[in-house]
Image (tube, rainbow, N blue to C red):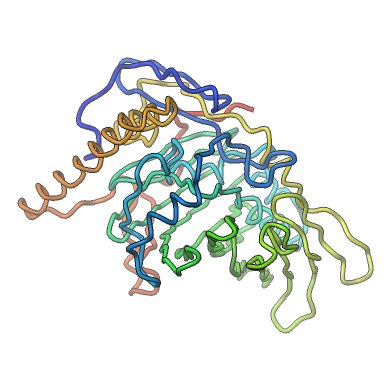
Length: 409
């Protein structure tokens, strides 16, 4: 497996007090830097991450002064001062394995098909985590992996393509009969006053004991410069062919003029229905970062189906349980030196470390090309489905094994 680290590093991460719950890890093979996940914080809808940079709006705008509206930013390189110490693989994975409440495990627990479908919809909403204006995770390198266990859920991610960037996720929970595949390709485009990130790909969630498969897409992301704001936007559709239930969730774009005061900020509306039938349930307008309710169409009133504080607050950083089993391609190892520089606010060190990771990738790509080799993912294979979804892969493993990195609860 080729990854962007030339040799093992044996150093201790001293960290930064700005990042609470950070774990210092020292082991003989790989240095691993693990930080707490993005989460909903009480009284702060921008997320519980203490990372701020002076004159951030001006600095962000300066990055795009020579970029034309409509330009694809997929290959746009950011200096580490615009990164938080986490790979995009880790950010995606945290949406699945970092949760204070086991909503995913509860999906198959309900005996009623409508209730199971409703819980899958709730899980879809729960994957929306706060983003922070002006800072983003690292762009994963080709072959980078991330392997974490939480409760009885085991999750594996791999960067299966670099051009275009595609991330594959496979998660299994043998105890609750859950099998999940998630393929994602972000396509960011500069639109003058904002960046629109279209998130292509799909998520497939199987409840094995019930023989049900749920298919859904991901919301997009809008990053607005004036006033500065980041939010999930677009429409998410969830469907289950076996039960006939479908859902449509709408994440509206907040008003340009009202900015952070807009009532549509962080909003979600939607409906659950069967084709050619009246809505089976109709969630009234809610907030994905606070609470979402559902309204009984038969006059049964409203009930809260999602509380973000229960799911995405007071989360702890993953910890290293088995240092000997950490792969060199693990995200927390590949980017460890860059993360150390960011955490210590040593931007020159972070810049050099990031350049080293990226240069190593370019060298290996040139070497493969000169040998006529085609890179092959380690844990996934292309599905070859006739072009209907070019970003869909099949996992090689039937079940994801327990990981050397675990989430404490």
